[in-house]
Picture (cartoon, one colour):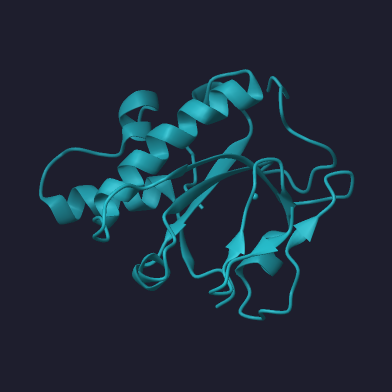
Length: 168
């Protein structure tokens, strides 16, 4: 796979996390915005030595090309052209050992939601836009990947231009 990172759906992973943990704690987004929160947790054109796509803030992307298995496919799209995703935030995970999926999802959901509000200009809970985040797999972690990338999208379809300060 060209982009060996996991794409997480906050709602799905939250429910799975609660079920697996045996407690009633649900992800930060559900706690913050209630059970109807619809956030989905899934960077110049650069590739790491291990072949991973390196995303940068402001990159616009074609989701299918980003997630396909063909290493020759270029997922980057000029933001002036129709695109699916735009990178609006990212952060590095800490530590030497691969963290639990539960901790990655919890951290990613909270941090991406906070970045979302700053980027869009309205709180995620009332926005008609959505986000995904991508996080390292155990194998990409072993290759040095520590980044969680937050990407925004319009559930109604492709966008042209940036969604920064979209205020919706």
